[in-house]
Length: 379
Ligand SMILES: Cc1ncc(COP(=O)(O)O)c(C=O)c1O
Image 1 (cartoon, helix red, strand yellow):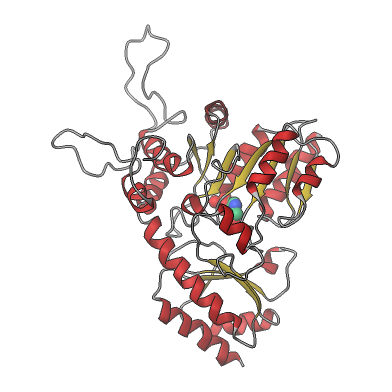
Image 2 (cartoon, protein in one colour):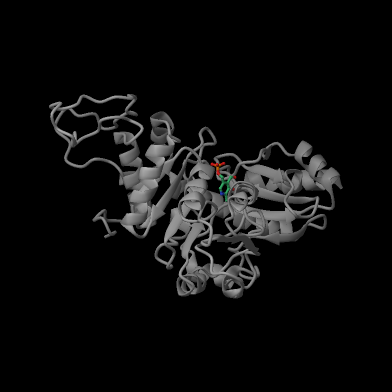
């Protein structure tokens, strides 16, 4: 039984989460997105309408989605129009001059850009630590931060850091801990249970899972923090569309199934790629001898489909991508189709030939044959 009373395992909670119970006869099994800006109000003399009144403040479709994701994360969830909108809400809402931020030097590059270009000019201290670095030491060095943001496993390096230990160090210093859980998904890792105060994610990726929308969310251990985020969302007006939210809720229903196939494909490909002479530095935390495996196993519930490897150079990556028939050259991850992204093109400080591979839901044998066949073809 989960915290809010929804019983069952991952599949049951993905399928049943957010679905209203005890509907009257004749009610549709699936409600569509609630597409309205305005709601009928009650008596005009009442200050508090006591129900939905304007869709910048709330929407029934958001509530269904937030209820489903909140159950998986283990805390009240607030949906945002993209992963970056969720990260921006946390970075802006929980930092200030004298309450700076410590974030991963090897995490998602737009989060770093936001900290450097929007927070630092306001006099907010912005500091960095590598995901596999010494976070307690970084927290203790200099003025205590107000917020520590982790990304584990990191994107694209797939390094892992110890959420429990860093939560203890952050709290000791009086800081909040937020974890970007995009790669793991709430089925793969529950940062709030590991001691984090906030979990943020780009639901654009595996959670919605079909590569057809952008969405994000923040879940909070403390309902007061959730309320702050909601109020800020209403004031800022950067709100998710009901249609995207509803599509993501529909996608969430199959997250358990998709993740299982994606992880199976990642395992098979990681094992096969390690044997190929053109390939170096295969990393997937699910491999028993991956440098991050022991730490990851101690805090993750299950694996996912994102791995990385390195080919000799950009030309090899290009030739390999031309030779495959089942790998799209795209920059998102967590979708149904297998996707490769050469991360140096975006300015990540990684080797030229480093590829982040997001395994899709194709049949494992087909995918392995295609990826290896294309590698053989380039010589
Ligand atoms: C780890 C991580 N966090 C956040 C984001 C931002 O999400 P979005 O593109 O939905 O704004 C991304 C996008 O790639 C990401 O990879």
